[in-house]
Length: 136
Image (tube, rainbow, N blue to C red; front, top):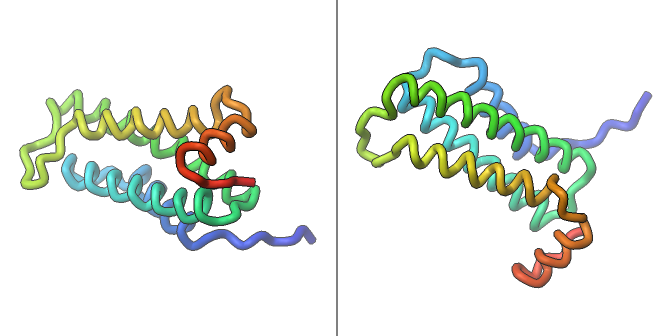
């Protein structure tokens, strides 16, 4: 029997939110936008607590990579839905399709940062120089 690695409750929460957004298609455009944005905020919190401030395990890194890819895919899908609908309805928060687009782009940049062509050594060097953070 293989040893079981504990999963951070933060990753479980983010994974649930992304999965819910992917499967639940009865939400209004505005509700879907807010739910997706909340999932991104939870993801960023888990990313910060686990990858930057903690000592991430291989499983933490796997969750980060897969949830990041899912958020990008869902963001792109949602942008297509918004395009067909003519954008988001006016709302008290001022949320617009351009905000969703910018967030997807930011997630893509994160993906390139962690999983792109940059070597792990160079990434660690930049994080130490810019943010004073040392990663393993």
